[in-house]
Amino acid sequence: KAEGRNQTLIMEFILLGFGDIGEFQPLLFLLFLAIYLVTLSGNLLIVALVVVDSRLHVPMYFLLGNLSCVEICYTSTFLPRLLASLLTGDRTISVKGCLVQLYFFGALSSTECLLLTAMSYDRYLAICHPLRYAALMNGPVCGQLVAGSWTSSSLSCSIVIIFLLQSTFCDAKEIDYFFCDFSPVVKVSCGDTRTLQLVTSIISNIGALVPFLLILTSYICIIVTILKIPSTTGRRKAFSTCSSHLIVLTVFYGAVITVYVFPTANTPKILRKIFSVFYTVLTPMINPVIYSLRNKEVNDAFRKAVLKLAALRH
Ligand SMILES: *[C@@H]1O[C@H](CO)[C@@H](O)[C@H](O)[C@H]1NC(C)=O
Image 1 (cartoon, rainbow, N blue to C red):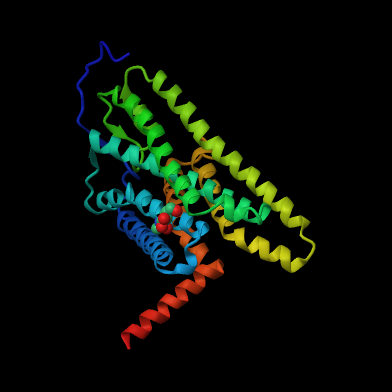
Image 2: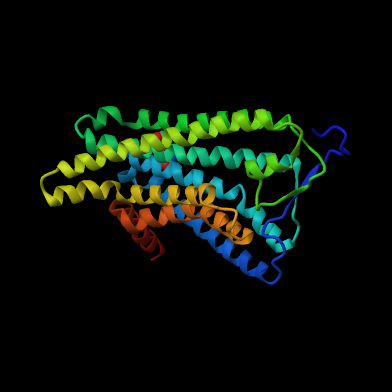
């Protein structure tokens, strides 16, 4: 209990980030700047292609375009601030700013997870129920899935924030992380956090488990169906429509496991932090690369757009 302690409410936190890393600071700044620029341009390219090219106006690519929008916002919740503090050395963040960051980071990462689930469902329908695909997955359904992902993530994150707003922050000003994520912030709040932790663990466990099981079920059905296709070319063709998505899923869940499950007490702290920032930014950065390199339709759309731009210039 905080009573009895010298309780001065604080207005700002200090995000310790990577600590005192001295001469590595400019290097890290350049590394994260490069990551941020690649992420922004790659995802903007995907959004532009999906909007402009009419051959990509199908649910699968609408979902991909929306995923890219989410990834742009998601990286923008913490990378610009991290870059600024690496550049200026100013590590303070107001309590309000910190909670805003926490809210948007949480809501956007869970939207990303739900969109990846919707994309699995779309691939499941396309491969396991090809004849009913057009009836089951179309513009309106896709719009509902997108809207549902956004609303359920923002609602569940709002519940967490409402509980978090009731806790007070005193004494401990330092957050030992590079942005305001839930558990580092709860660590510095004073008073009783049991209800908050219970509510959050229920919400985050449901929020993580349900999409994971849905994705797993979809892919088990997809693989079983593909294995039943008699011809090799047919099998390869069916698999090629979901391979990019499968790689993105693997990277996403690999990253989640590395950041939240893998770290042990023995791993050096600085290494753990660099790992977790790297994996936090990895999925958004790599997603457009995978789609533009591996997916034939995105690839064609890109080539066509480049040719058009070149023709305009002449
Ligand atoms: C997002 O999804 C909606 C609904 O399907 C679609 O109309 C819109 O074009 C998508 N946005 C992008 C950028 O792909």
